Image (cartoon, rainbow, N blue to C red; front, side):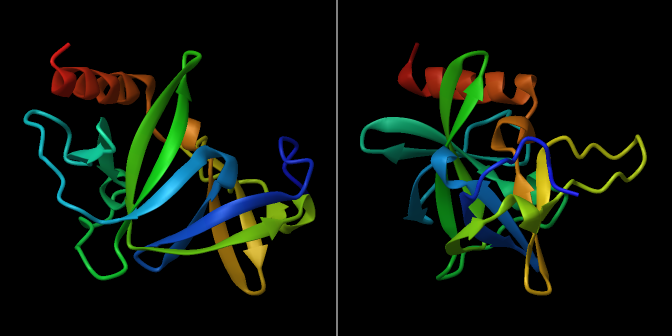
Amino acid sequence: MAVPAITQTTQYLTFRLEDEVFALDISKVREVLDFTTVTKVPRTPDFMRGVINLRGSVVPVVDMRLKFGMTMTQKTVNTCVIIAEISLDNEKIVLGALADSVQEVLDLEPSQIEPPPRIGVRLKTEFIMGMGKQGDQFIIILDVDKVFSTDELSMVSGIKDAAHGV
């Protein structure tokens, strides 16, 4: 059973968090950077690691492992920041997402993607677009626009404004 929202072959950037492989639609990814110094912003949630300077722009960086209830990302030679563009109320927000490593860009056909699992009503999975299959491996395809709540994204926007002195 395919995912209704996915009707054509799409390219995904795959990345690793702990032992799991996740994917983002490549059209949402701007670039991938080596992990650099992140400036901590006071009074932000744990998953909000801080901000980086990206060619003169302040970009908030979130720790995807913390966001998904895992342990904090540790800096290694493979740790990277995926710069993604998220839509919020018809506004584009640029966000950096920490990942243990980036793997590859791959094409997935609609037939290779299953709907996200239904795991009761208490576990929210609306940010999972689908489960991709490559060989024996599952790839959790994220809907990056739904990973963060509106409140969290508003906070990200506020952090950026505060860093600019607005």
